[in-house]
Amino acid sequence: MRIFIDTASIDEIKEAHALGILDGVTTNPSLMAKEGITGKDNIIDHYKRICEIVDGDVSAEVISTDFEGMVREGEELAKIHDNIIVKVPMTVDGVKAIHHLYENDIPTNCTLVFSAAQAILAAKAGAYLVSPFIGRIDDTNWEGMDLIDQIAEVYAIQDFETEILAASIRSSKHIVQCAQAGADVVTCPLSTIKGLFKHPLTDIGLEKFLADYRKGNS
Ligand code: G3P
Image 1 (cartoon, rainbow, N blue to C red):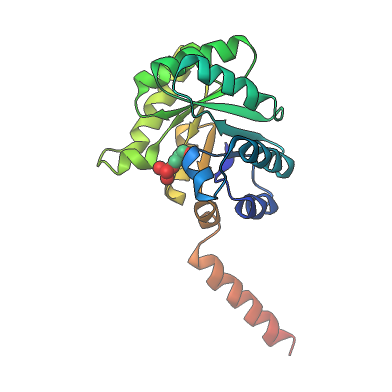
Image 2 (image 1 turned 135 degrees about the vertical axis):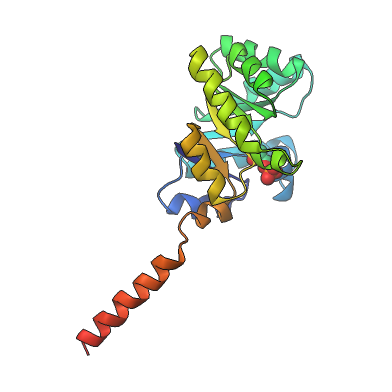
């Protein structure tokens, strides 16, 4: 399972990259706005900077909502770097755009997926990645992980090639459950990636090893 960071922050991407376990980056318009990245030229430059740091998939989301606009934007984004994956929302025009881009060898990430039905459409259209949002489903008192299980089962039975990118990840537990469910990728905030390292018994154990070393070497 690949681990992506879900941010547009260059500092966070550098920090995650330095950990040696980072496989890619996802962004969305909210994350770009959070970093104050506005205007087409600045957005393109920002994606170039991200691609220079991480040698892996970098999802760049279209902001058009009509088929022609999504295709035009997708083609422009794909020219930035070979690692750009065009992120397209799960709408009727989005699915049409995903299929058009697929036929033109431009890989896509179908985002804002909240049901297995939508995941089937994304796969049929030829999306390279499908992004079900676990945390946002949990927020509505449904079980986000059930969706990952269901999509993984359907994709395996149907032999769909689209990879499952579990998004809206909120905890280490989500990441482990995604690995168990067979998700191909998880995309997480830096704090959640760093949470994977933590266990109190590791800290206590290390403290004891070092205390014993000091006793023996004093
Ligand atoms: O990038 C899409 C997704 O990961 C967003 O997560 O935390 O805003 O629900 P969140």
